[in-house]
Image 1 (cartoon, rainbow, N blue to C red):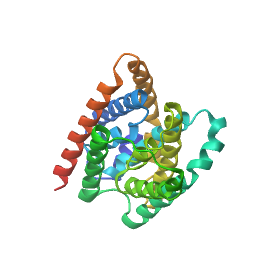
Image 2 (cartoon, rainbow, N blue to C red; image 1 turned 135 degrees about the vertical axis):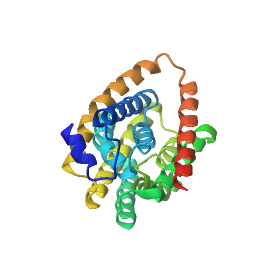
Image 3 (cartoon, rainbow, N blue to C red; image 1 turned 45 degrees about the vertical axis):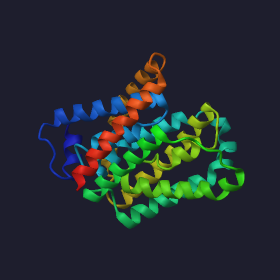
Image 4 (cartoon, rainbow, N blue to C red; image 1 turned 90 degrees about the vertical axis):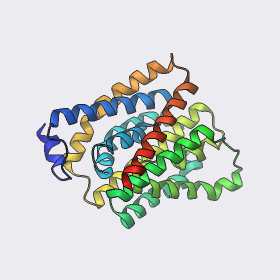
Length: 261
């Protein structure tokens, strides 16, 4: 408990019941891991959306670094195919890294009403796209410049909100990859985004040893949630789950926007 208390002492006041707060955070990571286990993404999105109800976006982003990083590295398997994959999406990863660090330098760590509003907007846009959007086919000629642009824009959004799905995921789905290739590619993008986000938070003095320690603790519930989600995927129709998932993000996003006005 001392580690959690020391970490939160650097930020604005939070509920005095440290055990209750830890239980809430643990439950959030179990839920976020379960979502990732079902649909292959959503751990940072869900955790940021719910943790932002309890703390600042900067705190929430710091907590998700290690669970997000390690679960995404696991998602990058099989590792022997990575060299060929990186040759095709390498420029996009450079864009993500540069965009995230530039955003962190320009805006600092995500905090305050502006960060809450940006997070809410990102959640609503992503959820609406997930419900209504239709993937398009992108030609190799267009990918040459659109990939780095999508990566750079994703980096800026990551720096502002701690969420790294917009517009990276819509772009990757438009590449018409196979299911396994898409999941692996998202794992690469999310891993790069997580590393860049952690570096941006560290540069803004928002990622400390205490933050890393609490983040490491959250790896266990995230992995438990992923295991539950993978089991649930065998029973629950994925289209139904996706609708519930995206509608829930819209509700959370609208709440964040309203609370930031």
